[in-house]
Length: 476
Image 1 (tube, rainbow, N blue to C red):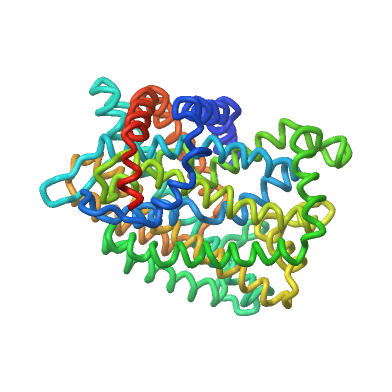
Image 2: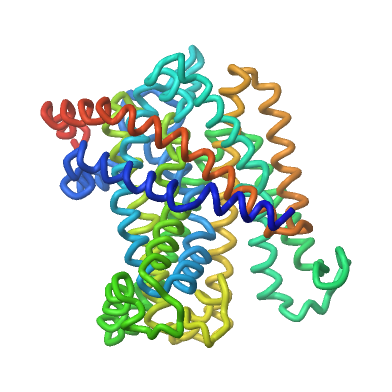
C-alpha cells in the first residue's frame, strides 16, 4: 500500500504540477507588474495596521497570523533540511525563486478571497478558492470548487494538520527528554515496524491534544487570538537565533552563498559527481519544498484571508503576500544558511530531517548542545502546534462550503479532528504524510486553474487600487 501511495504522490507532485504552479506565479508577476518588488514595503506596513470599519470576523493581522499558523510549520525546519540534503545547497536558491513568484500567487489568492467571499447577517465570513471558482469562473465550474473543498477537508483530517504534526511534536519531545527510550509504556507492532511508546510520548500527546481542543472548539476567533500571540512570538524567537548564527559565522557566509548559487547551476562542478547532485534535482527539490513550505498556490491561505475585517480586496492581497515573504524569504533562508554554513547537509554525516538542523544549531551557536537542542525542540513544538490550529480552520471552512452552511457536520468534524490529534502519536507517519501530500497536490490543481482564469480580474483590481492611490488612506 505504501509503495502504491508513493507512486501516486510522485505522479501528483511530479514535474507538470510544479511547473504549472511556478508558471502561474510568473504569469501573475507579469500581470501585477512585479508588485512583490515595488510594493513590498507598503505590504509590510499594512500587515501590522488593522483597517477600521471593515467587514469580517477577525482583524487583517489576525487573518494573516491564522494563515501563518498553518504555513510556518515543520517544513521550515525539516523541509529545508530535506531539500538541501537531497538536492544540495543549490536547492535553497530554487526555494527562494519559488517564493519570489509565490508572493504574486499569494497576493492574487488574498485579493480574490475578499472579492468573492460571502458574509451572512451575523457577520460570519466564508471564502476561498471554492467561492472564487464558483462565483468568479461561473456556476458551470462549481464541480471544480466542490473538488477543491473535498480535497481540503480530507487533507486536514487525514494527516497534514493532525497525525503528522502531533507525531512530530511527540518525537521531538522524546528525543530530548528520553532519547534512549528508557521509560517504555508499550510497543506497537513487531519487528522492524515496531513503534515504542514512552511516558514522554503519552504525556506530551495528551497535553497537546487538550491545548488544541480548547482552542479549536472556540472557532476562528479563538484560533486567530491565539495565533496573533503564538505566531509572532515563535517566528521572532527563531529569527533571533538565525541572526545569531549568521553573526557568529560571518566569515563563512560568502562561501555559503557561493555554494548555494554555484550549486543551483553547476552542482557537479562544485561538489563532485560522486555526490549525485544535478541541476534538475536541485530545482525539483528546492521548488517542491518551497511550495510545500509557503503553500503559495495550494489555496489554503485565502480561506483565512476571507475572514479579515477589510473593505478592500487589494489591501488584503498585499497583507496575504507578506506570509510568503516571512515564511520562506526570512525563516527558510535562516535555516538553509545555517545548514550550508555548518556543512550539516553533507551525506557522510548520515543525518536526516530535524537532525540536520539540530546539528547546524549545535555547531553554529556558542551554547551547550543541550541548550541548542531544547531551543530547536521548542520551535518544532510551537510550529507544529499552530499548524494543527490553522489546518483545522481550513478544513472546517471547506466542509462548511460542502454542507451549504449546515454547521452540524462541521461540529462533528471538529471532534473527529481532535480525535485524530489524540491518536496521532501512536500511528505510522510515513503513509499518513504521503496521503496528506497527495491531497495537498490535488487541492493545488483547481486553485491554479482559477488563478490563471481570473488573472485579468486581479490585474484590473490592482491597477485601479494604485491608480486611485487608495493605499495612502490605508497607511494613515
